[in-house]
Length: 85
Image 1 (cartoon, rainbow, N blue to C red):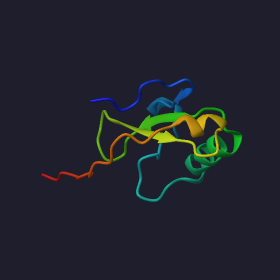
Image 2 (image 1 turned 135 degrees about the vertical axis):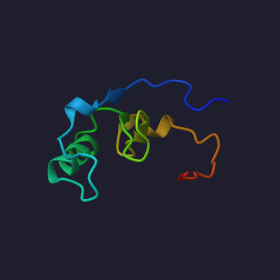
Image 3 (image 1 turned 45 degrees about the vertical axis):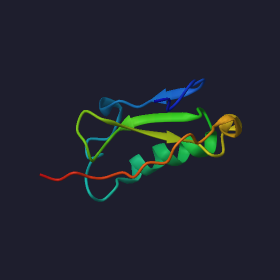
Image 4 (image 1 turned 180 degrees about the horizontal axis):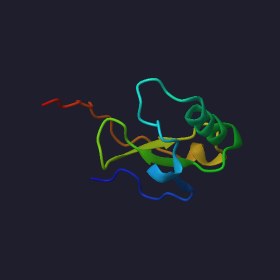
């Protein structure tokens, strides 16, 4: 299955780059600023960040204001299910 064929411009944020309270229920202001700055400055098309909902996983964000966004094609839409034990 093909999800992303080519990522030209990817920024990766690691857990150690985030504020200590990054995964709390109330989103810290400095974490909001990271996301807001990423969108406004359009430094990269794709942002890979640690996932709050699944340890050792990542969330991929695509910046709709980035100039390369027009090259993004939606290949498939799938339902997301959050599994709880």
